[in-house]
Image (cartoon, rainbow, N blue to C red):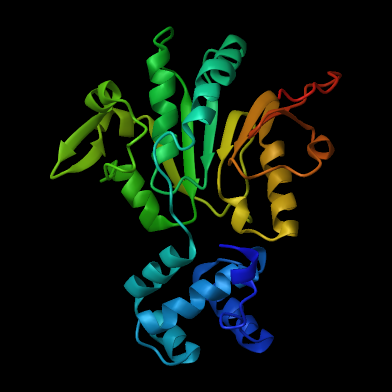
Length: 283
């Protein structure tokens, strides 16, 4: 959306109404809307109320407390799940041809975290890249996390995914890693067993450490500046020296040196090693 659309008064709530909604959402779902850009979130909220047939928020929140299934749907709506396999193909080529070979020279078994994994497309994309290397026994650990429980169920089931979602997957890889049923695509069972999916609030829950690669793409674009900076610090702390943070194509880590990161290419940041001077990012 454009800034002009975000500022449109039709969508703006008054502070009293929005503060009430934020309090109720935090209490019911654990999602802190203070971390999200207010105009975008208010627009989503305004659209949701008439969709579910309620005239006001108090009645809707009372309904949610008594209807767990609808509460789950509301939470899913607030957490935006849009992704597909090998999203930004050029970035994945760089990951495959430059980043992964370098990491594999350092360690034969990688620890990888896909943060904000949605329906699992990026986590499974990573598995495919690593499995296609074929020059080592597969011993890597891929952890994929998301706040959305229903998205995780989808990911654990391995689909279904649409043809659009696998449009960047080559025909030969489709044959090796997917099963087709009723024009939908499912990740094969052996692949599903190699990825661990867990529910996790990336802004609040404890984060593990010593990851070689952390992928957090198109997640922070919805956050306010303070939440973004806090999250990038948490992600950097989770990466071992020499490890990589892979972010979305429009995302830039502000002042990466402050959190011991160096930009090595668009969307890719390396955790600095002790005593190693920063390198200039490639053009």
